Length: 93
Image 1 (cartoon, rainbow, N blue to C red):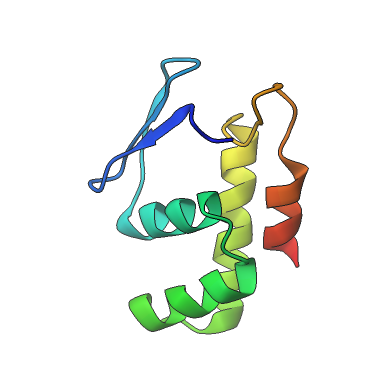
Image 2 (tube, helix red, strand yellow):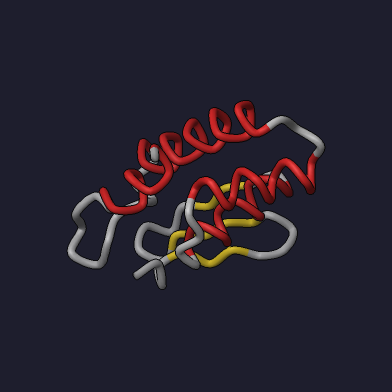
């Protein structure tokens, strides 16, 4: 579903459909990889808490904002070009 996104460990994100490139923080890399693998928001927020020493409420807010940013950039679109509402909904739960 997200074959159009190439993400390196260093945080370089490339959208093969548009040629656009982005730079993600280590936290962004962790979050995007997990979301692309179908990890639920609650589990991801808990992982971020352990890894980055942040409370769960803050992790959940940051994660929701991150996904909204990805959505606004047009990166959360499925192969049909439609928004991936399933991913956005998973994060907002």
